[in-house]
Image (tube, rainbow over the protein chains, first blue to last red):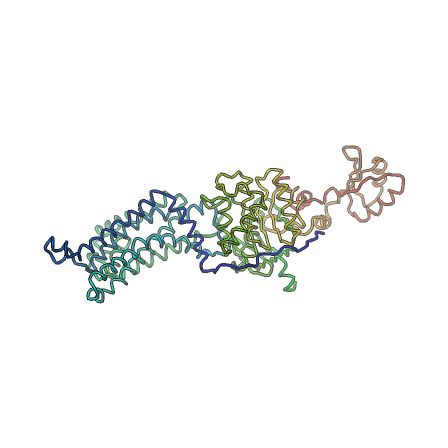
Length: 285
Length: 317
């Protein structure tokens, strides 16, 4: 008969709040992502367009420059400018996602590291949230954060007479960016979870966009319809943003259909994550 | 079992787990007390499934599990009390041993200074202090096994679940690790270990659970389990100065089914169906001019019990 002294005391000290623990997953994912010099350089490059826009806005209100070129303004600052800004930054963000996204979940799956995460007081949802937060933060920094800053710069230069009637653009920037970030992140994480090789996952992400667009066009041409756009992610996002920024659209599907398609794609990505982000993969014999 | 008692044990009540049509474990009823409990069985017997069930990483198809009174469906409570060391040699990329422990302690909700202190303590406990700030990718197999062990115990859990924790350790580290398990068990921890190495199971376990094809074949202290196997006669080795004389005398007793001179000629191997009666008889024989040096059971170890109950699917001896 073994004798147990029961002198051991389990940890009974202070704990950090539960809501913040997913950020620990993010912290190490950030470290991994930003360890690449190429990625850091590209990330820095993503700020060149916002910086250019900020300079252009300044120039647009600089009386000496306007007088020099004998014009009242170089360009109109309206929703279309912010719509284009988000289009450019969205494309840069997509490439950033293709860099960072595939390396988020796939190494943990390839190394069987998920049981290690999940045998902590961290749920699968928190794990996914932690990984997703990396993309959310990086993409935010190049989409809605500079977008809103540009809006504020323009407001400070043009005054309340411009700001008040255009205040809705702030909401549009936020909503348009949120849609892009959510779709990019979910797609990247789902592919990262299903394709264990990082490079292949990156290629698949690019494939979903470019082949989706190609197939969509082919369907439109062969079946003489516009619903091929429903598998064209770039056009779906563009259609939604057309509506969000109140722009005239050349994409021939209703905005509601584009919203529904994006929601369906996001739900499918969540389903893929739910199936794959598990401590143990169930192999049916 | 009352609530207070259940609060001190790991309890499986009629637990089954099926992976589709594949049986993981079936109708498991266990009540595991403190100390070291070893799960023993061939590959596919259900050892890892049982561990994953008690850690909540897989859900039972049927039945109920509680770990010190906590359901595995409550990970927030459970994982503060439980540490798990998986059999996979897997680590997040690029971390040093210290960062690995520190990050998991932060995930467990420990504030920075506490996580820093506990990581250091756990690293010291597994003798990895010198390699703590080296990347795990550069660790040897034994060092990786130890850092995995450290991550399981660094947050000061009350239950340690260790899947093949001695794999890859050299004899010296293996002995140190076994000593660590013993000291943790002495302090009152529940340690559940799965192992293929039967002689080590014998050396470290307070109780064993024998599994085969998803069923619990036997559980309890090895000696008790052995006594329950009535169809196999107990084997007893008697060291004495007159083995031939002793063999002829014991063979005349009806409780003895076989008596053989030990290969080294220094004793007798006796098989009996009634050990208690045989021991009484031995007292009389000892008074009859035979000098008995030692009497020891020859088959109440895990290996023998395993062979009797599970048979040919032998793990590592």
